Length: 310
Image (tube, rainbow, N blue to C red; front, top):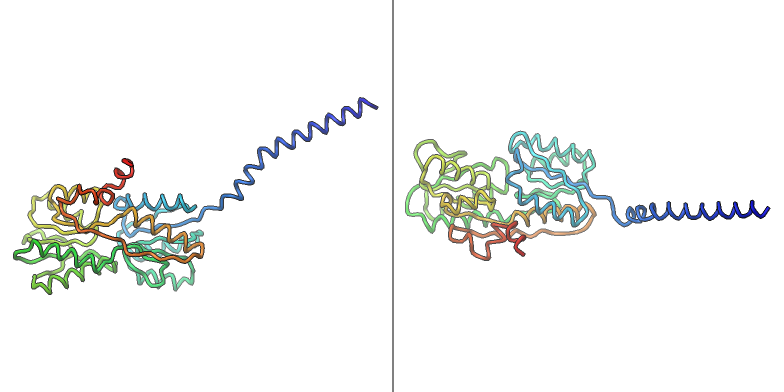
């Protein structure tokens, strides 16, 4: 009888120890699951065919996503500025459970109409171009940027026609820059005309580009073909900074791509959680070759190097 009682006690002790061991393994996982909310799924839609021009912006987006508990899915188009394809992909992302969208709209009006037509409610933050009903827009003051860039050209201009590269399509933000620059040139009595590409002949003396990809491509053609026009553009990508340093670009309007990406994702997460928030215009600077290594421009043009040196 005593032996049986002793065996029961031993079995009870072993069972208690086993239960304690199981709980010691499972409890931290259960508590961690309660502490860590499920990651929000955000879709980032560009209007380009690749994301190479958005490398620094993507770093900002990923940092904001890490801090705010979100995961990102990046999408590009098979043809640049294809608004129909962009609409289709965005609908797919919404149906797939995206909590919010970050978009560089190929056509803001068409994208807004599509969202209304689909009768879906998905917070959307735009980059570069404003969109009616968006939860926020992250961009510099586009008309002001166009005016300041034109004023930089006027500082150098002595004679000749200015070629305005009209690459915006239906992208409202880029078009706002072009139109504002055009107004400044016309008010100053400077002849200007629009063209979608650089002419093969009849070399212009002055060229303006209003988006980073067009700026980089114009500078590459200038270098490759030995052309002599003065180029005024936008962007702070590594390639553009190098072209500015080599003198292939006379001046650029530059802003922080890292800040743009960070603020866009932060606002998208806030909107997905039903939180109020606003986004101010991104500050920008007009930079020339001699401004590249000024201390105040280091974080703007070399964000990775600046952060690693801290």
